[in-house]
Length: 354
Image (cartoon, rainbow, N blue to C red; front, side, top):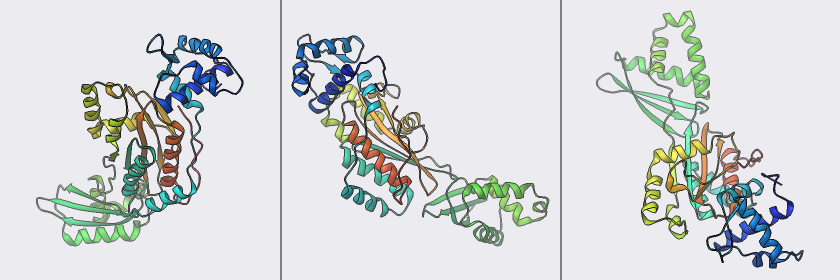
């Protein structure tokens, strides 16, 4: 059986059935209820004995002696290993692709993906777009400022615009700035930032660069961060209010701590970086997030990282209760990831649940 060879086929079926019923009802699951759902006539007593064994192994807990059983975090971690993402309808897939296609920039598409995920899952959605050196240069503009500073405007092919103020050791004349701008736009438009950096480093080592004043100026600006695109990722979070409608069994103080934690952008970046560090397109499910913050213990994160054609690394995730519809959420995250990574509609790589 997936995840734990010590479980027999019957134990696996009973545990999975108990988890699915608990997800639907939120109430402790009784052996009699599971017995009625089975078609093989297995008695409630036999199911009760199996559930007792599962409880001894830490898969089920019993809030009261006379109550049914509740799946533990261990049970949910086991369950997600064999969960299969649901497919979304063709109409919904077309709607999503149309909405994302209407965004002008990669950052806007990633931000919109969080809104769509909230609509699809009714949980909390988190999305981040990290620019990389894979972005393609469209053009640069250089504007002199006062006090020996320079405004560098970098425009990439995905319509993203980045402004960076460079502190210069010596001022550069307007005519020289125009020559540098024209040189970069003529020779490097259509190159990735990474390719431009490699070529400038190559030319930096070339003997002829030492005798070219314009090239020396350009290399100096490069050293000051002219082509630096390593900006902090833009974080988008929506749907936090949905947590109010979920019984997380948190005190008012712990609920307040949870919302404070979600308001911290730095903590959200940490959450995505620590839990979504696998290969692009590989779906990950993390049950219980107390390692990030104690108040997040009853929560689960389902997400993935994808490489976008624009040269961005996008991380998208759904944050919700441990008692969530995993297959539905997994399907939503996978489809949004596919839409971001492959606008043409090609399939994402096979997923891996951990």
